[in-house]
Image 1 (cartoon, rainbow over the protein chains, first blue to last red):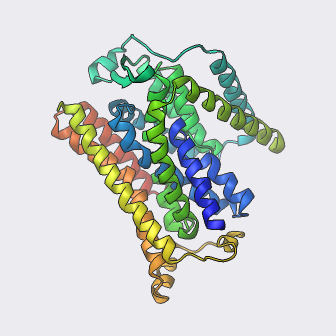
Image 2 (image 1 turned 180 degrees about the vertical axis):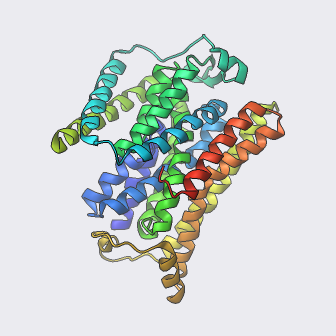
Image 3 (image 1 turned 90 degrees about the vertical axis):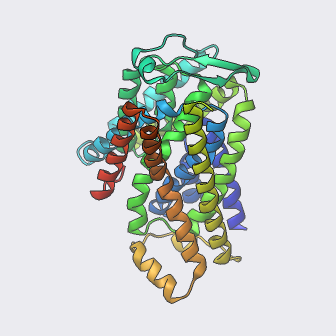
Length: 273
Length: 121
């Protein structure tokens, strides 16, 4: 019974994680700790596995549907990997309680700005780097119509990825939220392209961390296997549903998750402040 | 098929097969060692650190094939994104896209450094 509940929760986590490009950790960690009473160390280790499972499970579908911008993802991964390394080095030096309040407030503000935003991002201005590396692409837009998009502010996006991952390491939260915000806000990518490209990237840094947890013995198959199997199934569903779902609906769900995470972060910062 | 589509097709195929293999190994391993009654996660209410090699040794001694297959699946899943980064680099080199191949190489080097130094990204 417990195993089945865990599988169903993981399916939902994989579905939501792949839909929004956030990974499944956002649901897996609270479910494991609050519902099953699992120690936080095992839960965090399982959440890394769930991010890899979401990322890899949905990637093939998103690539096939031309939602993932693979060339851009490869470029931005330089920012995420270097940002994660800097974050790891800074983590022991910086107190995270003020950071939780500052960036919780930043996410709250971003959620409000997104709520006020009308329509999806779609840029026709191609940055010189984007022209040089052929980063612009097409994706199935409104009602499946193949829509062309360009990529703005590539250097800013790269810097944003660096800070997204540094912050993620400092705050111990998934970096998907910051990544989607940066791609949507700075690079003006359509919401679906931002989610799918973020989904593609999050697996790489998670796998590097997961390697360390795996060797330490914190990734336990009794937890990680049912979670991963459920997540993979959920991410397959997410990859099938997302191309047909209106971008506005995905944005609304993203804003709702953003609001919950930002309030949680502010409360955590105030509690430890 | 143009260059980008061929590259995307190959990476998508690699990920699809990789996830399927890892997922099946984990499913078989989990079902083989599944505890059908009570809360199977009860023993994880408190944390005790034991390196993975000792877990594997214990499973081998007990001939617990379910756990061993599960670990194989987990290892396959964890290594997928790194293998994908490596494959992307190779494919860009093959297509003579040297700037993006260089960028992909930087990502792979960053990951290798983190593995070598035990950095938890």
